[in-house]
Image 1 (spheres, rainbow, N blue to C red):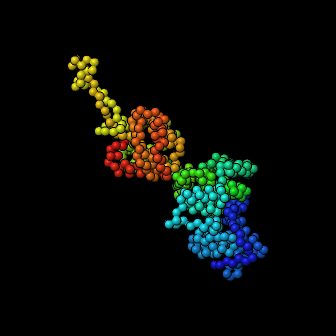
Image 2: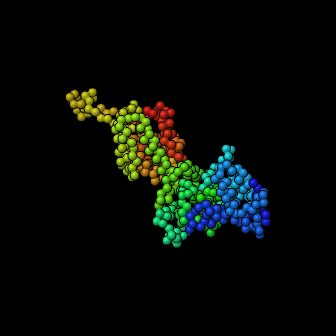
Image 3: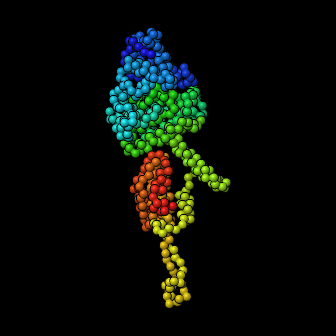
Length: 492
């Protein structure tokens, strides 16, 4: 099908729409929202008309329906894609083909940036998004920021970007004022969600989970619709301070998630921190279904952490059941506490485990053993053979080798507390340690000298050990140990 426009001027579509939140978001309201996006095309000149090859008129409602169907009906996707792409080429000021037709906002931006589309041979790296953020701060290059942010993060969810923390704080104040003025029409759960939402402050990139299906969060004055409406409103009123990266029309109208990005912090951040935040977001977005609370928002960073915790519980549970142990052993499945163990308690548990280990021939973990023996004379009365002497020998336990999770879910506070626990234990035992950090990869082993050093000196040693980042994979620790017979004997 071909659609021909007449009497129109070329325009640029913006990723903003008018949503009447006083009505439920049904199919009719969804079409109206899509119409508000493409309406500039029909208003670009006098008597703008569009007709198909049979001469039948194509109204804004019909065109909006075609755009929405492009993502829903897989069997007609190819033909619709060609039809809508042809419409964009007739009506838009600048448009670069290559993406799906509903990804019109990225295609418009890429017409000026002319960036290669990601593929097996084209991969975007942290420096691309960092440089785009710097250009935005310097020259307000919104097109470059949109294209590089979308091609690097590569997720189909709208991203609201803020120039700096000041702009984000102003945005939150704007949200508070709008919610306050509308509080009489909001139910208690929506008010609680907004109160929870106002606590969120992404350092680099974070997000909020809105819905699992298109049917969720479609009620009048729902949190999901209001937060999108007010976010777009703030971006429209504050160009240069806030903007939106809209991957597609469909995901803009009914987003599953919304991401938030601090441009200034990303421009300053080292690449490994950007990789950490993006990998956390991607880890959460891999889930096909999210657990959504009625009165609290669900952050993507929290969802990623919860997913890993559940995965560990299931793995421990399955491992115990598969071994077909006795019923009493099956009941020893590890239960996660809701309160973190104190450093002293954790240190005592580790010491108890180490003391149960068998002796080895040589290690860094040794202690003096003093025994009475008649094989040596008494030091005080060497001439009296009836008095026993003392035999001093060294007893070696297996070396203590620590593997500390430094993945993206571990905060600096968690890391510091873990290190202080290690120091408390090592000082109590007065032994040297071997130390690795790990995530989905593992660092080289480092020997840390504990004996005769102060806590400050020991902590400085820990700080010098390289910290790897990424997602958590405990298997890399076992693989690392099992590859070396020496490590298998040494570690406990």
